[in-house]
Each structure stands twice: as C-alpha cells, then as structure tokens.
Length: 222
Length: 221
Image (cartoon, rainbow over all chains, first blue to last red; front, side, top):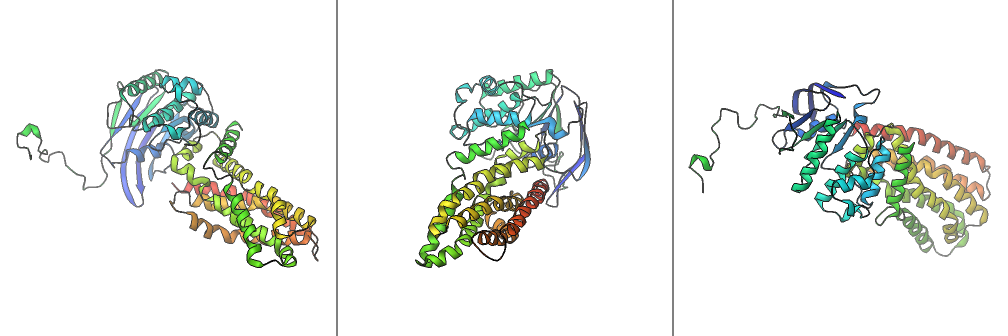
C-alpha cells in the first residue's frame, strides 16, 4: 500500500490548526509525526483515520484494491476503544470480528505483549499500561496495512516498548506502513519525520531567538 | 455480516454485565406503573380505563432512560472510531446497535407489559392488546431516540437535550399506540387500523432513524 497526502489543512471550530502538510509513504516506510503539545499531531491522525474532514488537500491510497483508507488502518490512541466491562479476550474477539482479516488469535496476541495471564480479566481491572498493551494487541489480531499510533509508548514499560518496536519492524518488513505521533524515539529505523509547526504567526520561540537559559550557560536561575 | 453479529453480541453482553443498562429501563417502567395506582386511588374502573395509556406513557419514558448512552459510551472510549473503520457502512453499524438496544430495552418492556397490566387492573384482552402494540411500537421509539442519541453523542451531559429533542417526535407513536391498545378492549375503531399505522411508524422510523443517526454520527466530528 502507498499513501499520499497533499497540502492538508485543518480548521477546527474556526481555528486553523495546521496547513500545507504533505507527505508520501511507500510500503514498509514509517513516519514520525512530531511537534509541540497542541501542535496538531492528534488532529493529523484524526484526519488520516477519517474522523475529521480536512479543510483542504487530499489523501489517496494506492494498491489496496477497492478498500477505502478507513478500512486499511488500525488506530491506537488515547481513547483505547476497550470496554471496561468485557474481558481482554472479548474485546479482542470483538475487534477481530468487526474489522475482519483475522490473523493471530487473541491469546497469541496478548502473549506476545506479555499479557497472556490477563486474557480472562475484565479490562477494568488492568492498569493504564496493561490497557494500552491490550489495545496494541488489536494490531496483531487482524491485518491492516496502515498503523496509526498516537503516543503508543505512553504508560508502557521499557520491555513493552521493545516489544512494540519489534512489532512495528515486522509490520514494516511485511510491507506495512506506520504513522506515529510521538515525543520519543520509538525504535523506528529509517523513519521519516514530519514536524508540525503551529499555523498561526504567533508561533512561540522563532529559531533566531536567544536560547532559553539552561545549566550549560552557567547563569542558572536557582 | 460477521461484523454486525459481533456488534450485536457485544452490546448484549455489555447490557448483561454489571453496570449495564439492561435492567434499568425495565425497573423504571415498573416504578411508574406501580406508583400511578397509589396516586389515582383504588378506583379499578378508572385504572383499567386509563391502564393502556399508563403503560404506554411508562414505556416512552423508560425508553428515554438508556438512550443517552447508546452512542455516547462508544464515542467516549473510542469504540466508535473502531466501528467507522469496519468494512461495513456506518448505517449498518447503527442498525445493529439500535437492534441490540431494542432487544435489551423495548422487547423486555413489551414482554413484561402483561405482568404490569395486573397493577393497573387490565383484563385479558386489554393486556394482550397492549403487549402487542408495545411489541409493534417500541421499535419506532428506539429508532427515533437513536437519532437524538447520535446527535448528542459528543455532548457530555446530553441526556436532557436528548429528551427535549426526541420526545416530540415520539408523540405520534404514543397516540397510535394508546389508541390501538384501547381499541383492543372495545371501542368504535377496529383494532387493526391504529395497529397498522403503528407498524408503519416503526418501519418508517427504522429507515429514517438509521440513516439520520448515521448521518449525525458522521457530521459530529
């Protein structure tokens, strides 16, 4: 699958979030979306997932037959899409049946993420990091070529971050695409970076402004 | 098809779990029907005359109870994004969800109506008639309510707005539901006429409600 975005612009409640975003991803490539808090990283992912309509610009997918972009992607974000009253297994079975194209069983997916013991536990009993891992297990139970990850390592421990990096590497080796909004290095080798700058002119800290004082300058405030 | 079956099964399981809305509307229905005779006094003739109206009124209000969470719960935790990515049209997703909601709210009301009819001194024919009209009419209430629920899905405390939006649209169903129930226990109108109109209302609501609710979900970011 290939994905091309051309001159995307988004306006929410009358406020321009960003404009003129363009990128193109070939099979196996990854894109890291970076930017300050509130710059519009999650908004860009919402546009890609089809939840928000862009004000201008276009998104095109190639080589996926008749599937639409929304049918080609997995989303793992802050809202994890898990039902607290259902067990981890029930949540994953539901996701697999809903999205189609099943691959691994829920048990295999959870064991890969080190959560095999939580298979029959209601998600309400799990910690934030464990919930995030159940949501990530969704990536494995059905095959979709594009992964949209919003801060995927939030609340994850170091071991799970390594597992996620391995999952993403395998996905890309199989021709999949990864787009991740993040503040951290995710272990994505050769990933391209898309930095979102605020669209408004009062963008803080222009590049030629004096650097904020820090310990290195010797003149610290404490 | 598999996706829709999964949706219905999940919503039924959620309604059955602790904290689910499964029993809520039924208990609310029981409360209204049980309290009215205390307010009206022990006049059995009066009760059995207005009994069908009380049952229908209680059914309308009980339907409103669980509706606000129909789409809001899925919008809050991100399940709705999952559903828009399913390889089925959003209209069918809405249809499956509303169907599951009706199975856990409307259908129990219709099935429990004969039992609750005892509380308002209905005779056998009136009980059967009211139960049948509820069975035919509650889908209309649920589908109309689904439109309001979809419109208020992204509003935090949308329950009141939902009721204000939706209640006027439920009035025709209420009118024909009550008139059909009363026709069942004697009257000048034959039973089938208002019942047929009630069925038509349910069918129209099924089509218009599904399309409108899906459109509302797409439109609300």
